[in-house]
Length: 521
Image (cartoon, rainbow, N blue to C red; front, side, top):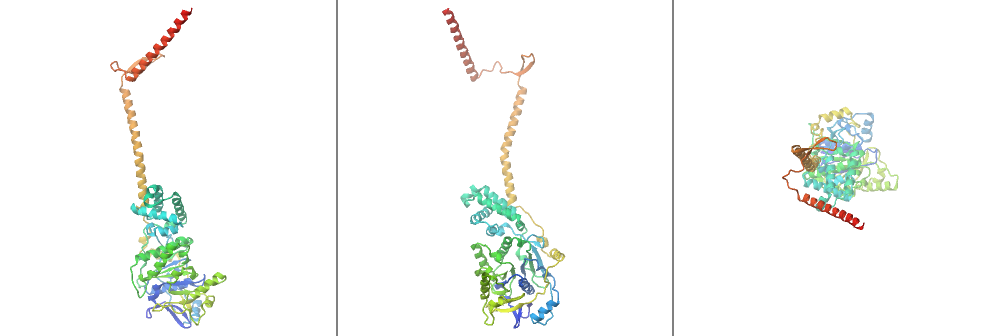
C-alpha cells in the first residue's frame, strides 16, 4: 500500500511496527524468494499494487494464471479480518480496490498478442532459443549479415527459414567473404526451426511488433497500468519464456534514456521463475544480463526477480538486488541446508534474530525482509508479515478479461497481424525470376524448331514434283531430284568416279578369269 503523505510503500508489519520501501530506492531492484506455497505471489501483488498507486506502470508475468484477479477489488471475509487483527495487529478499515490491468499473451488467446521481429530478437538470443552450438551460432550470425547486406528484412518465422535456405544454397559464394557454411550446420538450424515451430514458438515473431513504450501508461486516476502477461501456456516452453524475458531486458536497456536518481521508478518489472533466465545461458549472455541489471537502474527501471532459492541467480546479479524478501525455505537434504544457510547469510545481520533458524520456521505470508533505506544502505534483517493485497485473490472471469481486452486503446494496434513484403517474399520472387530466365532459351529453341519445321513443310509444298510409276503400277509423286541445269556436287562427282573405277576393276577380273580357263583347254 502506497502512503502519499509518507512517500513510502507499506510493505510489511511486525510487532515493532510497519516496514516501508522508499520509492526512491525501488529502482535498485529486488528479490522475492521462497519455496512453493509460501506466499511469493501475494508479495508480488502487494508490491505491484503499491507501485500502481504511486503512478508507476508495472509489468508482471502470470505463471499460474492466478494474478488476473488484480483487475477486481478484493473481498472481505472472516479469515481476512483475523489476519489483519491477529497477525498484523491492526485495527483499521481496510479498503479493497481493483487496478488498471492490461492483458497480454504471446499466443494471443488470453490477451493482446505480443510479437517481435526476427531482427529485433537478434542472432544471439535466437541461437539460445534454438539451442545451437557455437558453430551453428556462427552460421546464424552469417545469416543475419547476409540479410543485412542484401537489404532483406527478417520479420517473421518464414523469413528466417527462407534466409537460412538461401545461405545454404549459396554457401560457395558466401564462403570467401563471411566464412565457411557447412550443410550440416544449415541442416541443424533447419531442424531446430522446425522443432520451435512445432512448439508454437513461431507465433511470437511477426508484426506489429510490441512497442514497450506502450507499457508506460497510467489510467485517468493517475495509477500506473499493470501489464499482465499470461504465461500459463508460454511457461510450458521454458526456453521461449526465458528468452522472451531476456529480449525485454535488452529492449528496455537500449530504448530508455539516462534518467539519474529519480524520486520513483519510471517502471517496474517482475520476472517470475527467474532461474530460467540464467539456466544453461552462455557466459556472454550472463555478462550482458549483469550489465543490464547494473546499469538500467540509472534509466529509472526497477527489476524484481521471483524464484525459489537465491542461489538460482548468479552472484554477480544477486549483488545488484538491494531489496530482499525471503519466504520460508525447506531444507531436507544437505544441498538444501547449504542453500538455506547461504540465503540467511545474504542479509545484513540482526543481533536479535537468528536468520538461519527463522528461515525454516516462517509461515505462509511471513518473510525475512531487508530493504534499502533513504541513503541506499540495507537495513538489518527483520521477521515480518507481508501486508495483504487490496485486489481480488484469484482469477477473473473470461468475460471480464474479454471486456478489458476489447476496451483497451491498444486493441486496434496489436490484435490483427500484418504480413508485409520481407525476405521470404523477395527471395520467392527472385527464385521465380531465375526459373523463368532459365526456361526462356529453351522456349526460344522450341519455337525456332517449330518455325524451321514449318519452313521445310512450306518448301516441300512449293517444290516441283514429277510423276513416276511404282512397281505395283500405282502413280506416285516425287520431288525432282535435280534440274538439268544444276551441276553435280563434288561429293557426287567423287562417288560416281569411285563407282566407275570399281566397275572397271570387277570387269577386268572377270575377263582374265574367263580367258584363263579357255587357254588351259
